[in-house]
Length: 344
Image (cartoon, rainbow, N blue to C red; front, side, top):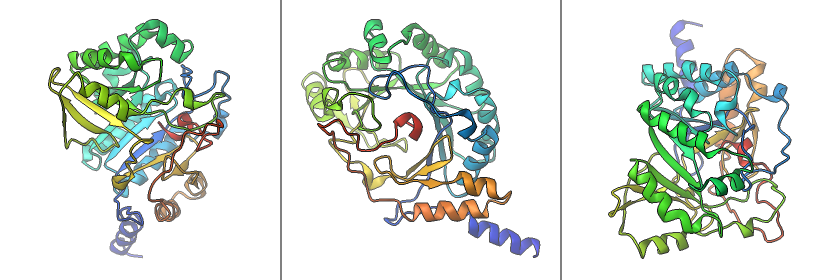
């Protein structure tokens, strides 16, 4: 085979990803670990059993897998967990993946974190080409924070946010809206975030994984939250998009941006450009379906990526039109896997 024909074949194998509904897949979220140093009660049970470390893809395999998706058209890559920064030597993965930013093959490399380890890694993340990050924080009350996370230290998170901003990273705060727990605090959380130049995105509880209690006690519709906020603030819809499912408004009184992620009250699937990979190499094309494609087997079967590309193409060809999350009053999750495994 000539070099030209080999290149042509390789380019064909790495053709761009378009699902059955004409949506181009350009955003990949990868869980590098299912482990976390917190135990947020809406996400996981207190006595979680995590995957054996031998089941996880190595950092080198994660790099190869991400690189294959970049070759197939992914322009935004988000590393998640669990808590991604608790994975040993995870910064070597950031350093390696940053080469795709330097070549222009990748537009953005970012992560979602609980902030507990940010003070250690913020400067290094910036050195790797990370420009903005999401930090999960549901309350500014240390007592509530400990209640939500079961044993978390909010001071560590605040120190992490300080370090991230000092390093020049743009920070967006993600907060899960929790009925009866932080719903009255949302205005003050928003004003605090905007006062520090950070956007805030509110997220509805999602019925993923067994947490040992009913999520009906936690679920707070964001349609209700938005209506409450609109009675106090001037909210103007924005066309802004960061490649994710949030819908944004500008809050006139604070000058900041407020996002709403509403998997329960408003299905956002019509423009879905995302797929997720677990730390074991399982591809999920929809957050709210039990679909799963094993990428670890083709990854390890050959040094060539051809078989991997074929498996990816088959999976994308089966991507559903949308999810159908429901909050089940009988305490059955819509999806059996936890968000920490899926790549939150």
